[in-house]
Amino acid sequence: MTSLPRTAARAAGAVALAGAAAVAWGALVEVRWYALREVTVPVLPPGQDPLRVLHVSDLHLTPSQRDKVAWVRDLATLDPHLVVDTGDNWAHLDAMPALLHALEPLLAVPGAFVLGSNDYHAPSMKNPARYLLPDARVTRNIQPAELPWRELVTRLTSAGWLDLDNRRDALEVDGRHLSFVGTDDAHMDRDAFPPAGGADDVRGTVSDGRPTVDLHLGVTHAPYRRVLDAMHADAVDLTIAGHTHGGQLAVPFWGALVTNCDIDTRRAKGLHGWPGPRPDARGGADSSWLHVSAGLGTSPYAPVRFACRPEATLLTLVPR
Image 1 (cartoon, one colour):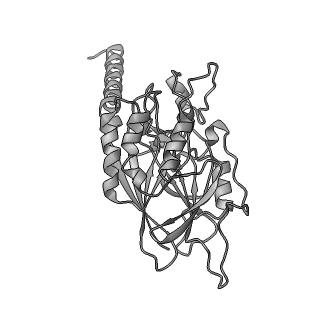
Image 2: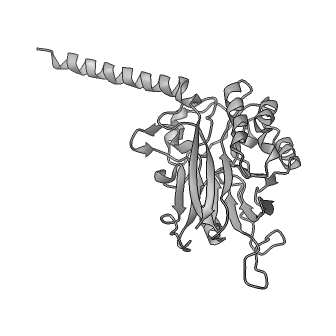
C-alpha cells in the first residue's frame, strides 16, 4: 500500500508538472498564436450597407517581433472601411520603425486612435503577481523612460488618422458620416471627457429631423466604469476599448480572473452591453454596445498568455 506522504508527493509533483507545461504553452505557443475575431454589431440605421471596422489594440511591439509585424500588416487584406487603434502600441524605445512598418498598410485606411500608458512610457520590471490584483495600477518609484509618443501622434495624424485623446472629431467613411468621442488613458488618470455641445461636437439634426451623423463611436484605451458611463450618457452607439488583455491568464471554460481596471471580468473581452445587457433590436437607451479587445501583445516582462489568445477584431456593423 502506498503511504499517504508518498501519494501527496506524487500529487504535488503532478500539479507542478502541469503548471510548468501550462507556462511553457503560454510563453512559447499561445502568446504568438494570433487570432482574428469576427463580430457582427447591429448598430447602423435601417437600410444601410454593412460597415467593416478593424479594431487593433495592445500590440506592445518590440523590434524583434517580426511575426507580429507581418500578421498586423496582413490585416489590410480584410479591406476594412475604418481602423480603430486603442493604444499600447509599443514596448521598446527602438520600436518606432517596426510599429510604423506594421501599421503602414492600415494607415491608408481612414482611422482613429487613442494612447495607452505604454505608449507614453517604456515598460519596466515589476512583480508579475501585481497583475492578479483587481486593479493593478502602477506605482512608480522610478520614473520609466519616456517613449517618443509625440512623434507617434504626428506620424498617425499625418496619415489622416484622428487623435481622439480627450477629443471629439468626425470622418466620412464609405459615404457615412461618423462622429467620435474619445479619452486619454484612464489607467493613468489622463482622461478628461470632452464636453458635449462644443465646437468639435458635430452631432445635431437637419431641418427634417434626421441626425447629421450616421454613427456615434466612443474610443478609449482602458474601459473604466467612469469612462463607459460617460460614453453611454453621450449616446454613443458603440464604445471600443482595449487594455485588459482579456485577462491574459484565463481559466479554461471560466474566463478572465482580472481586468486590470474596474469593470467586471465577464466583460474582459468581446462584445457586451453597457451598463446593462446588450441593446435590443430597437436600439433601446438602457444600454449601448461595448467592444473590448484582448489585444495582440503583453509586457516583455510577462510574455505569457493562457486560454486567452492574442487577437484583433473585425467588427461588421449592420443595421439594427
